[in-house]
Length: 240
Ligand code: SF4
Image (cartoon, rainbow, N blue to C red; front, side, top):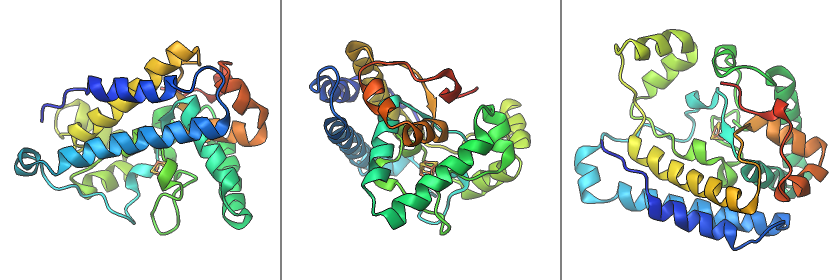
């Protein structure tokens, strides 16, 4: 399905961050992220329930308990990582502590892995719960939000044999099963975050979710530095 990027949404999301001004505090940055997530989710839900879309799109297979897609690298902006670290800090100790431990443990195993090597490792995201649900659902990254599959069997096969499935896709023997409309909507929100980051002189980099959050947990002073425009260490970057 044709899925144009949404310039209006990008500009609206950028405006939310730009209203913060340079060097916002963590609470203000988190509130702005919440507003961006809400706007993008509202845009997707509005599109999802439109009659044209219902007629033409296959049903979404994603549901609580299905976490096949949560076994791969996730690209994240520095401000999104700040939001997740703040969320973990705000949780009661008996919830936040184990999640922080899981992030640090996964980071020790995955730091610097390429996208392919990470998928091949079969390691789950540190935030994937034992029951298959995301344990940071309210603050999950925009890239996670945009992924909507219409075929859970395809996702399971991609988890079991990522290299084989990638090869079949590259040869055109399989078709992607992820809906383009939500991907375009959440990518538009992401592009708004990047537009604002450029104006605010924040680093415009794609970080690896686990590495970025682990760095913020272990070095809390990085939060203020990133929100003031400091460039995150290269070791935190997503490796293609
Ligand atoms: S952050 Fe949540 S939705 Fe994203 S990969 Fe991890 S468990 Fe899955």
